[in-house]
Every structure is written in C-alpha cells, then in structure tokens.
Length: 130
Image 1 (cartoon, rainbow, N blue to C red):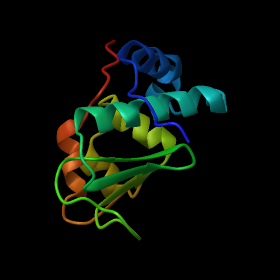
Image 2: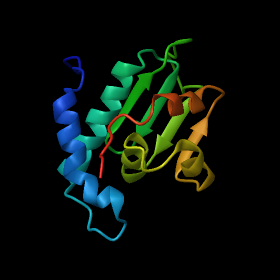
Image 3: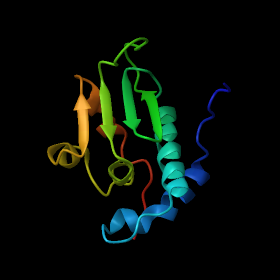
Image 4: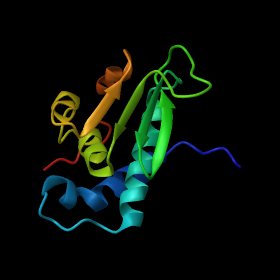
C-alpha cells in the first residue's frame, strides 16, 4: 500500500468550507458522505503533519485514524493515548467551533491516556471566519 501524503493546505481549507454550514448549524442537512470524509481525512492528516509523532492516536470512524504528537511510540495493540470522536464533532473541534473540554464533558469526545488531552494544544487547524 502506498504511503499517504500530507494534506494540501488549500485542499484542506476547501474541504472544510464545503461542509461549514452543517458545522455551524445543527439543523442544516448533512453534506454527502464523500464531502464529510474528505474534510475529516484532510484535517486529521494536517494534524499529523503539524504535530508529528506517534504517542497519541486520533480516531474519527469510519474515515480515519492518525498518530501524532511526539513522545513514546506506540507499535502494538491498543494505543495508550487515544482521542476518538464522530466526524461532525471532529470538524467542529478542528475549526474552533467547539473546544476539547466542552466536547469531552458532553461525551462526544473520548480521551483516554495521560497524553490524549495534548491534542487540544494543536487545535483549531482551520478557521472558518464569519
């Protein structure tokens, strides 16, 4: 399988802007699956590029899982530090429309391990503006 390339910043911003109305307003119908998948994958890969490493695994099922943040590398079994959420919550986090503590308190973001919370220091990735 070929290695995945880093996300193109312009493509990442475009993908997120394409789903922005859905992120801002919970009553807006969800975009098509391909648009959501693209935005999720590109933002997760951008995070992995900005915070290189393998001590935290970020999972946004069913679309992507990436390892990021420098520190002890995880190689087998269940990673000790995991961030997991749904696609809409992830995209709201990476755009700054939602913060990590709020999402965790509401149960839409699961943080496990002592270093999982460090992901908050790398967010937001894309700002939507007004």
